[in-house]
Length: 111
Image (cartoon, rainbow, N blue to C red; front, top):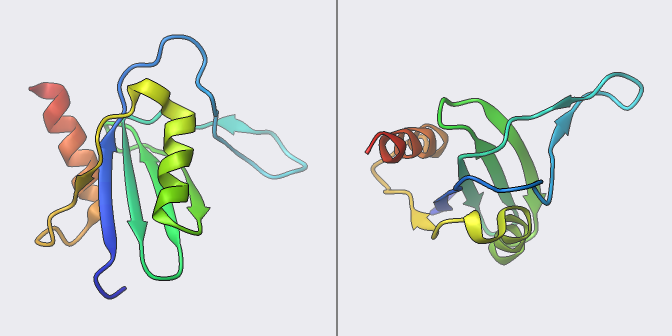
């Protein structure tokens, strides 16, 4: 991607039931609930946008495809409501936005 948009947002503790619960599994097999996210990583280019969810220890919590950055942000707002922190730009010096998101969340949790 040429000059992709890369953003992260921390997710705080949610009281009660989350708006969306992500699951993994085949249609004809058992489903497993994915872990609740501590950090979101949004990566977009001129044609699409992906929203990834991770725990502070790096476990994958699901991903969703969106047409635009605004669509992805609206989905995050729906899922995490007032527990969603502000969106922060991933520095261009960071080659792996996924690793940066998890590392940033871990550092903030330990602070």
